[in-house]
Length: 480
Picture (cartoon, rainbow, N blue to C red):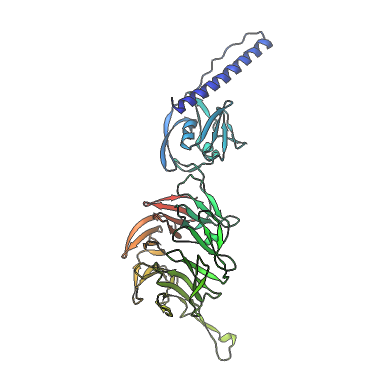
């Protein structure tokens, strides 16, 4: 005999017992209070047609028994509990539900509009109905009481998703998504399991960890505190440790491919490039050419080259008397330029690879030594930002992607180039580029602002502040 039949028999038995007890007590009361005869009134109970109704629970399609009462669909509490992996038992004529993680206890009685949720009273819109030993309840109220979530028409998650604005996505070595929640009282780093309907956890409340850079093996996040001190934290436990003792300003942290070093722009004026070896904490200076305003540091996978931007401001011009009226700013040479530095040759000088006035963003080094970057119109005209490519020898700059408005580029650990951009219809597209040919990975009507890739190729991206997990061209919103 299956669990559903046993439960139905228990419910029916309990209610019959309650009815008999109530009837006996009533008869006794009538006998002692009045000898007069009473006329029996025949009562009828409306029988509702039982139908099969489909739900999608954590992505799985499930059929549940249901009835319709005054235009409201009520679902079998037994079927709903099974679908949500909730515990169910009969207790003093009530049905008691416990969610699968032990967070919530819900007590429901047939034909009673109120229910108890963790000791507090709530109400159904339509009271639960008992029919043929089965109790039928409202979906939304019951799902919410158990801490689950109605995500859309016919779609349910066993556990409510996090809600808010998120950034800085990444993965740990087990494929869990690491991301920062930005809209709380303080920044918090969460670990989200890639399966919806599973518990999330706060990994760190350290504000530095909120913008940490994830190591290539997905075990560590690197960040600096307000004093410039370098730290790493364990993406498995959230525990933090200090690396070395240098407290100079460090920006644009970048891991070496082997995960043994963290490179960065160093100095109050971003005038140096250095790295710290994780095991020893020793700082090594790579470049100190006194050129200020370096940014967007990138290190090649073979650690033979670094690329970065130098941001030049306008030049002040004045007359011999240096009067205020004669002061002017020449912006003709202002803007960002791409530079590279050969790490294999001692004493090598940086090489300026671009001289154009376009805005340059997000340089990345490909496996063949070429460099790509996003080129944007400096005058803000309504034209596409273009993904440009600089040849490995630095002699040739070409347009790689120009048919969409490119917004970001990412080079994965295994050398794949991922690019996101806006299409003419306003939607966003993420695609992989090989030899200048685009292959679409994911498309969304919302923007794509950040992208991260796991060890096994899963993609987490930020779209409209939400974390979206992309697998096989399909996106699942892990947050709302």
